[in-house]
Length: 264
Image 1 (tube, rainbow, N blue to C red):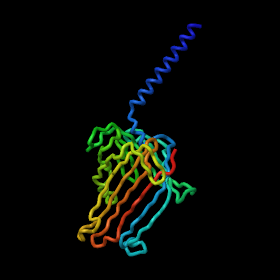
Image 2: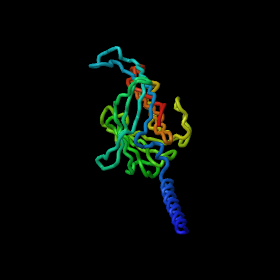
Image 3: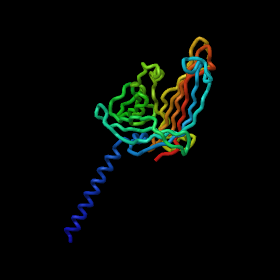
Image 4: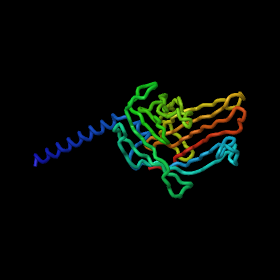
């Protein structure tokens, strides 16, 4: 009987030690990676408000149409869902985040895009502090360094350093400097309040915004994303539009705002 008791106590001690080791290892890991949780089956649904600006002569062949110098609004919903994994060309484990859309709440989801996410320990250049890990994010033929870890207020990095800025469609992404702001702060995205978030200010530019110089082409670019702990992105605002110096009232470009409304 005494041997059985001792064996039982030894087993409990071994189990407790193993649990303690696992717990210590987990605590030693960087918890800020949970601002972008990557796990199979995780999803977030967003309400999306999009505005498209059509410059003068918009339409097939560049001729004037009813879209010329107009503003068009679209409301929809988008769902991001991590559904699969694969190994990339460098044998790194990557995640497939499928993108679904529907025109309204209760409509049928339709697959319309795929985002690839690759956690990596590759050193990122132009940092104000050392980095232990980064998150590569590929969408629409463009790769971004969405986040770096550990998350700390004031960190900056070139988030679009891998973007194909030689392509005219992506040229406006050149030289963006991402900055962490409002770390661990609460954030209300217009739908839900989140207690623990971090803001990534990606770009904020105004050139001849008030048309002060009639000889200079103007543009407005603003990009911001907010991430909540254990949820991921809960707010996104991307704006980019341009206008000719002699026609400042006629913009070309877009503005998109995404707000998380449901997640698991």
